[in-house]
Structure formats: structure tokens, C-alpha cells
Image 1 (cartoon, helix red, strand yellow):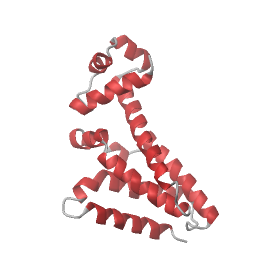
Image 2: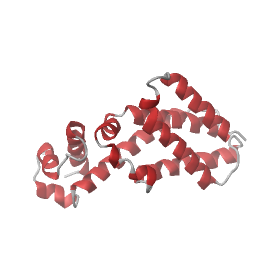
Image 3: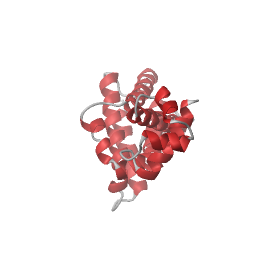
Image 4: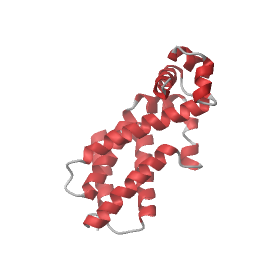
Length: 187
């Protein structure tokens, strides 16, 4: 059995009841397999859900990276990709469910540690920043610190875009994000 079948079932369950109320038994029922089949692939429900989040959010970020394909330089590409990533995450049903139903599960990834998806995004930023240093479109700075700073900026917008746009137009706010990031990276 492919992991994707189990992860698709887990996604269905999370969208229906949230992360905390999703059980291994429900994932197995939704996938139409035995619990033992799920246990053979994943030791517990937490590991299934971690794999699901990594697959889903890394996939969204991969798709967002296509947004910068026609950019004139690495800085423009990075800004386009970051904006697309924020939009993709903030409108994704799984991400929205996580923030709406189980927001306390996100807190460790903000205040305690970086998760696999954050590390994936940071690696992509690292490559874009290094390319920008090389083509002269991005201000030279230690790439590790620069990529972490950009990650934190993008992350704050992704987590807070919906409440931040209750009384501020989203397009205007995202234009300001684009300006801030572009200005911060200019040589």
C-alpha cells in the first residue's frame, strides 16, 4: 500500500474533524484498510499527520516556486515565490483547518522549533539568496541569517494574513509585503 493512500485518508479526516480528533482507526476506515496496515507504515497517528503536513505544505511551496519562472533576476524571483507561497498557504483548506480548529498545534513551530516544511522552505530561500548574491540582485549578507529572516517574514504573513485583512485590503497588504521584501533584499 502506498503512503499517499493513507495520507489522502488522513487529509480527509483532518478536514472533517481537525487534527486532534483524527484517529488512526478513522484513517484506516477512510482508506478502507485495517489498522495494522496503517501501523505497518506509521508507528502512530502523530507520525501519519506529520507526514501529511510535510507532504501537503512542501507541495504547496513547490508549486509556488513555479511562480517565479519568468522573473528578471533572483531577487524578483524570490519575491514572487514568497508572495505566491503566502497566498497558497493562507488559502489552503488543510492549513486553514489547522489554524481554525487546532491552532495550538502550530505554536511549537513558531516558538520552539522549525519543522520539516519550514526547513524545506529555508533551503529553497537559501538557494535563491545565493543565486541573487551571484547575479548581483540581492544584497550580500550571511545566507543562513538572511534565509532565516525571510522565512520568519513569510511565515508571519502566512499565519496571519486572514486576521490581518479583516480591515485592510489583502491586495494592498500583499503589495506592501512585496515592497518590504524587495527593499530589504536590494543591494
